[in-house]
Amino acid sequence: MTASASERLASRVILLVALLVVVTPLVYLVGLSFKAPEGIFANPMAPFSWPLDLTNYRNVLAQMNVPKFFLNSLIYAGGVTLGQLLLAIPAAFAFSYYHFRFKNLLMSLVLISLIVPFVVTYVPNYLLLARWGLLNSLVGMIIPMLGISVGFGIFLLRQSFQTFPKEVFDAACIDGANSWQVLWRVLAPASLAPIVSVAIYVFIITWNRFIWPLLVGGGDPASYTMTVAVDIYYNNPESGSNWGNLMAASVVSTVPTMLMYIALRKQILRTFTEGAVKG
Amino acid sequence: MAAQPSLAYRVKQRSRAQALGDVGNRLLPYLYLAPALFFISLFVLWPVARAFYNSLYDGNLLFPYREYVGPERYVDLLTNARFHQILIQSGYYLLLMLAGAFVLPVLLAIVTLNVTQREVGIFQSVFFLPTVIAANIAVSVWVWFYNPTGGLFNTVMKAFGAEPVTWLRNKDTVIPAVALVAIWKQFGFHYLIALAGLKSVPNDLIQAAAVDGANNRTISRRIILPLFGPTALFLLVITLIQGLEFTFVPIEVLTRGGPAGASSNLIYSIYQEGFRTFRVGLASAQSVVLIVLFGGLAYVQYRMLERNVQYDR
Image (cartoon, rainbow over all chains, first blue to last red; front, side):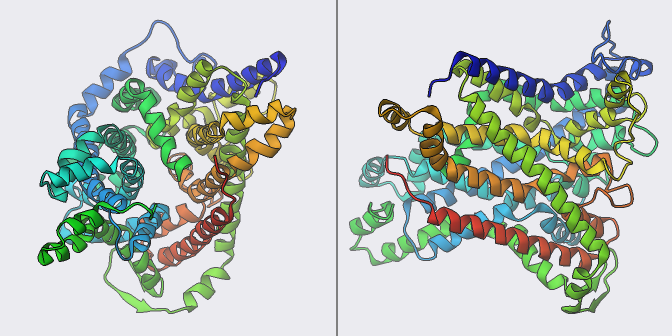
């Protein structure tokens, strides 16, 4: 479709306005983290004040055990990602290569699990963890998450496995490989791109989770993730938050996912849209 | 999909002589599915079943006491004025989310078709940024924006000579203020989906129509919109289903449901009853109402997609 020059100009202006609205909070997030604590309300119209002040970052690094909480986030997000892949890859394989009874019913269960609101599952799962003595532990934080959003990985991987040429399987089977070997030695290595995409998606979503890690790990600093720590240390609506510190801690905790996003932007955007449009 | 013989079928053919292997092969797909289905059942489907059961009892998260209430629970809930308030507020949230996280992204995606491919890349990447940041962290900067004295919004209001507004303590402004944050966080993702859906409309169809003398408006109405239908429907349903979920962290960080419950909704209320007042029965009953509403929505989408005309390429 061809648009006239004036249409193109108007479109650009509209999009630029939207861009400005989306970006402003992020600019302030970074800007406020570099303002001196006493100057945080000095000039609200200017997100940055010069020279940049590092007091907030020094406070955060001194008050919070940043390496520990980072490690916790890494174990939590990494554990969930790895676990979900180990569950989703064989399941997607079954759904894309086999015909079997109840296939549609089982796939519906997987899809239904994706629309169940998290608040419905959190109370029963919390009680289950309490009974197993897994509260305030990273293991307890990870295990229920292996069920809660694994359906998305199954769904996405099934889409890409279905496009894999079947002849390759026949060749492998004739060479005497069983299906387990075909799955891990042929299909998985050949599908590295979609698998990595799902891994990035799951990792970012999990790293960013807040309510679940707060419920399960919020009782003991040894199991705080970064998102939980930022909230517990610096966000206090009743007595007033320490804004500069809050923003600095927020920036620190966002660095890994932001770096991943910048480095792998194209792949991430593709993964996030794939399921939606194909489905 | 069913036309191609599957690997299982071929493997079966190959090893027809081995009866044992045959049985094994028929069990194989279930074995591959079992671990994932085990976790999904235990941590998602079982809790849903529990919610139905628990809703019939009075129970407490902290103390092991339970008393049968029965279906009366639902009569109480559905005639409770406070619950009506929660439902009305949920509806208000959803209306705002529909405007900001469905209509707006679709309109902007349509507008985006007019700019160059390189610009599209920039807009996509930037609009998506809030999605990559943890919700509680992204929301914290909005707390500062809404600060009644010295926050950005009231500073701007003052510059225009308007009275300062206590955005989060005022019953009239609190829901739009919270919804705005949820929309800002979710907007980029929905924009991306809408854009991908619009771009999946085959270009040759559009060009063929143009050659036949169709103008832009006809092309939009007769070709792009019908083919965009399924994506739009999907987007509509996820906006409705996830809309309330995406207001959850903003509510928790900005208002905790206040003032006096004025910014609560169904999802937040379930969380509060469960984890703040520990009334498991009540939380479960509200969960059941939510599941029924969502299940209905998903079913409607499923039926509509089924009815949708398939366009051959």
